[in-house]
Length: 114
Image 1: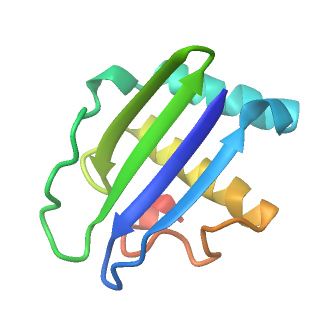
Image 2: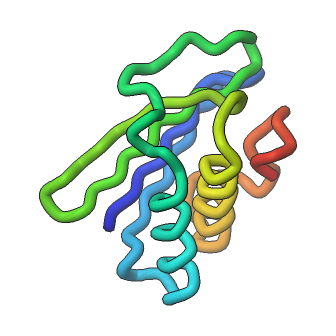
């Protein structure tokens, strides 16, 4: 499974992106991500980007490609389920550990992504 997470907006307006292939991850990370994707209601997330409620809010684009199926959903850093929060937090941690785009400071003003 290939996952791309893009984050835009926030106070600085800096866009960040990370991509990973779950097949290259340790088994426990792969299983955790797949469990979260199964638990969260991915199909219920918006199909189109929404306007954030505040100027300093982050917007996310999450694309999951599994075989021939590719699904992209959008959400802000508020009003999302615990599973979405955990997924974003876990993807950002894996990104930092691998030295890719997300910085070590977390996702910004919302504490649940840190």
